Image (tube, rainbow, N blue to C red; front, side, top):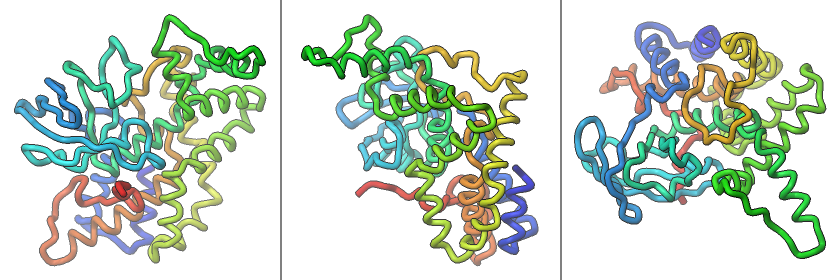
Length: 317
């Protein structure tokens, strides 16, 4: 991955201490784990869109709003519109931790929950990782979804199944979960060699990825990068998944694959992001981050503000 990032830097003609500093920030941005560029808020109370909680040892008050969710998942379509003290405004939801009832939606946030927040670019990368992981994460719901399909096709008026586990029912009703489970079933009919191209095509069809690729094609600096990397993109993606399998002791599946669980942020680097998407985002972030360092009055620091990611703009209308 570092070789690929450096390759993007060289194409942009960037080098020196500023580029190295931006490289560190880019690598940190793409490290998938809840301890990196993710803020934890322990919720005390919630009143409609206003939340009171503990953040970094102090009391924080903030308001949240639901933005256009067409290109974001269930969590990251929620954003912090304002906060006191400042520092969380603009951040997006990425997960909610509560082992007792992990199936609840962000709108059902309650006292005692731990809310994980991240800047939009960081949230978008985690969104890509979560999307790619959905087929493995929820394939255990396949029998339930198949039963729902059978019941829905009957002519006797019955159209739903009631289960003791309401969480499973809620998850199985989500369109993205249904699509992921059906995709996992289709993969079972393919050889291992044919599965990887299908996985990569699914990731490329994600609206967020299409946004990145469209922005890449429209950017003067990046327009020539995509044709050079496209022939190798699927190979990079396959190598990333292979690397993850080796980290798991030769098993690509997670130990909890067959369980019905909500996505958390226990991901490895490279777990799910196609290399072409990463390069598109990093190349833009690299060039913009280094430019801000070189220009007079540049911040000279490292962090999320110095690494804007192309086309992962605030989607609030």
